[in-house]
Figure: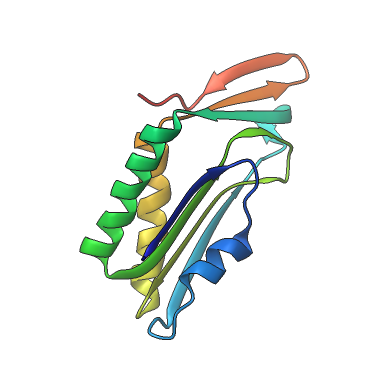
Length: 138
């Protein structure tokens, strides 16, 4: 198995790193997305993430498979949370392992960019004066 895909209410960077570590790979890159405390000059109090899990996992699998088939990745982990998170909390972790670092870096960038475009995960930002849904996907 070369992919670890999870949608959960708790994820860790170490979980992703442990999965992708392999002696054949000298390059491991990790992208970590955390909740910011300010968006457009407004204080963020929390975020709420919801998703359509069956479709989200299928889309995440497409992303992972592309990195393996086309980008030279040996192993990849894509982890995303659901539920409420506070500023500073981790919400997404992507770890990619390849023979060399360039492919791992490129795969992380491709995976997060594509995830934000295609995976049905919705984010609601809460501010001191209200809330708004953002980053809605099809």
